[in-house]
Length: 253
Image (cartoon, rainbow, N blue to C red; front, side):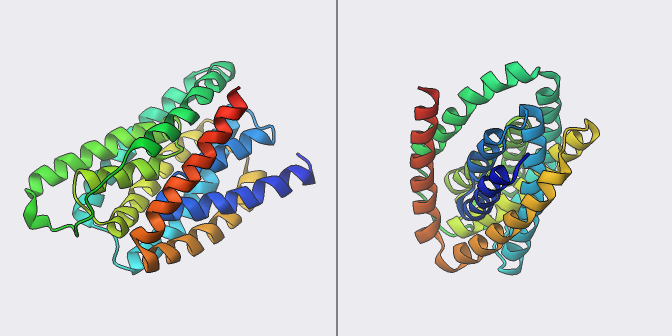
């Protein structure tokens, strides 16, 4: 690993943290960045989990301070995501590096397309009285389990998928959806990271310094999202994914 690689990597990790804290999808920037500097697929996935987990801790704390986390949704989603992320990470570890590279080549544009085409229209403030609490808990747990499995296996777009589902299925407003998605994403990150640590795939010399840039991006981005709400969340989600999707298509061609 040389200095030029790190000069490319660290600003991208900052940008990924900034974007992820606002609208999710930061992994669509950070994971390709680790792959670009030459890390093997398993090490890239694991090291990306390290830096993104640490950065997400800080944006989660900021959303919690701003009272933007809906805990009746977050708690069952967290439980589901912990289980799902472990299953997904175990699946990723048993695949060979060459097979994983092929899968990643398809999953990156697939994740971008799904996030780009999804268009949640409801943004009403969430009221627990409007939905059965048991139904809310069950749906939240299922969302956490499903997206947690995706996050443990792959990751990019996880926060965005959560925001879309919370807004469209559970009618959270965009700020609450972003805040709730953060704590759930943090849980799935922790579950997957522990699995990768046990598997010996994390490159700490690269991931820990990168985490500092991720922290800065997450802190600035979450503060902006709390102030601007959907006005900043929706445009960032759309613009970034258009750019990333175009880049991925060009790389594949």
